[in-house]
Image 1: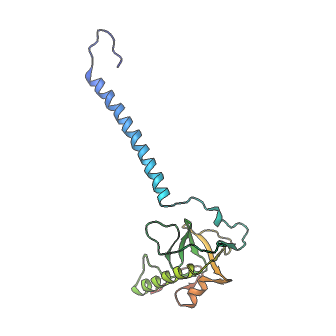
Image 2: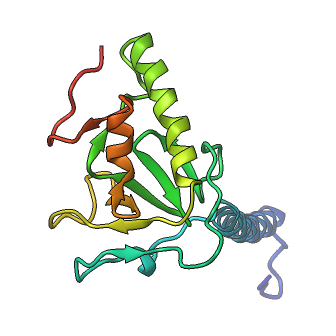
Image 3: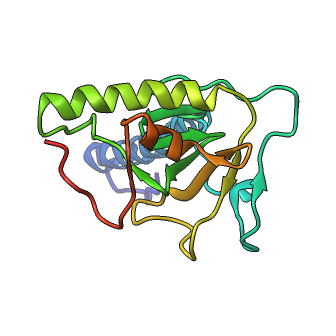
Amino acid sequence: MNETPGEPFDFRKALKAQKRRKLRKEIALGLGAFAIVFAGGMLALNWSVHDASLANDDQQPQALFQQASSPQFDICGSVRRTCVVDGDTFWLDGVKIRIADIDTPEISEPRCDYEYQLGMRATHRLVELLNGGPFELRTIGSRDEDQYGRKLRVVTRGGRSLGDQLVSEGLARTWTGRREPWC
C-alpha cells in the first residue's frame, strides 16, 4: 500500500483493497470454473453446432450408411445423440431430424389418451424401422429446416419411405402442411 511518511496507516483502506483483490480473484475463478463446466457439459451431451454430413445443397439423395452396420436407435433419454424422440422426430449423430412426409401423434403434450397411446406405438415402431438396416435421408422441396431447427428429411430404405410404412400401419398421417387433431 502506498503510504507517505508521517501519515498514519489506514487499516480500513487496506482492508477494502484486500477485499477488492479477493473479490476479483473469486470472480475470475468462478468464470473459469463456469467455462470449464459449460465446455464439459457440451462435450458430455454431444451437442454439435453444425453437421456438414447432413447438409444437402444439391437436392440429391444422401446415403448415410454404406457400412455393414447401422447405428442403433433407442428412445431418447437425457443425452440425445442417436435416438428417437417420437414417431416423426429422431436424432442422428447429434443432429435432430423431422421426418418431412408424415405427422404422428404427440407424446410430449397429447390432448387425449388415444393420442398418447398411438404416439407411443408410432415411436416404438420408428425405433424398429430405423434399426432395420441402412437407410437414406432425402430432402423434400426447398426447405432444409423447420422453424425449430430440425432437418427436414424423408427417410427411405430400398426406395420406400419409412414414413409411408408408418402411414400404412395406421401410426401416422401423410403430412399436409398443417397439424390435424388426433382426438
